[in-house]
Length: 103
Image 1 (cartoon, rainbow, N blue to C red):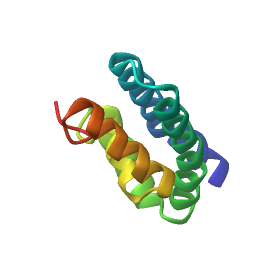
Image 2 (tube, rainbow, N blue to C red; image 1 turned 90 degrees about the vertical axis):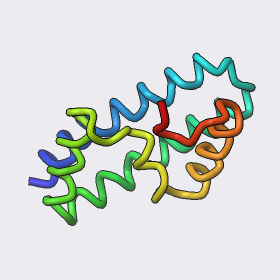
Image 3 (cartoon, rainbow, N blue to C red; image 1 turned 180 degrees about the vertical axis):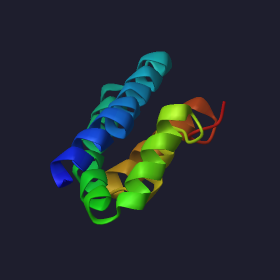
Image 4 (tube, rainbow, N blue to C red; image 1 turned 60 degrees about the horizontal axis):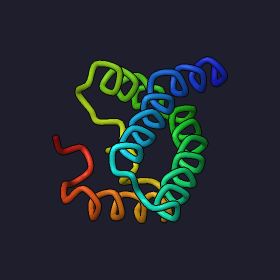
């Protein structure tokens, strides 16, 4: 069952999150240092999200649904991520002038 949950989270949450981060980096024409930090965050958050989803199926289902339907911005999941994700959010906010998830 946990392999199934991991696959769902990867497809509905991690892939859109990675695409969102890549799109923001491309749009910002950010520095290589910023890009490296954001990519480090994307690599670190995936296993953390899968672990959380494996222990809380309700969270996994509602998060996958919310991200897939656009109710939740994928980058909002970075807020509870590791320290590199906090840095990535700060850097992206500083380069865009907006909070992560703002349009």
